[in-house]
Length: 293
Image (tube, rainbow, N blue to C red; front, side):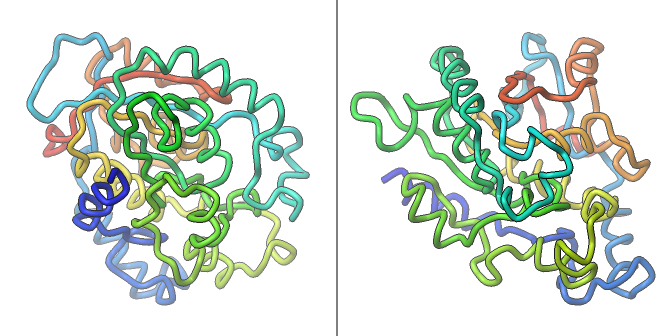
């Protein structure tokens, strides 16, 4: 029943892939291409912030505000050695034993959160973190309520190395039958990785960053990611994601991403100013309605 409900809700919000602009992946070949100029126009259209953040205990309240619990995935195999993380061994990196223990510890906290839905990146390390950190809400528990677990391409890690590639949607559906994958495009199986591979070559041909050096893509994807939450009806949502994508929004390196998130008080600005640790939870109040500028 939950998956059917998830399916109906999410048909309203289609995933816009890769650069999340109004152009096809195959058209984008360089920053000076016509498609890239279209991307720049799309970025310019997003002149206002995507979202406003408030301290979770802020008195601010509106009909559109939500409580958001942001969680970085637990320790993955790729976190143990940065250089080795680029190797095929760490394709769609999985959790380490330490990572599993981190989730078990976090689960002691999450049982007290009144979470109504869990939005998660479709990478293995985030999916496992979500399920292990919210075992009391996952679909196969026997004696507690369940909530929707919804995978969204928009909230995945910046696509740079093989650890950031994902497995085919059909494989994920088999392994995680109680997660809604209806928002993922099935062909090609990983369109964002395929896009950058078509530009830079495979992991042996290009050893440096890919999407992390593409601020326009990140800008458009960040706006699309927040729109995912805008389209959710729940008022209390957990989000399981990744440190680099979080960083590009909360403490951006690129000028293009400045202002995607607007901090409405000093406390929340301080809270979000540092890098997320593995399996770290931070709770904020978010209002996507105020993104009109």
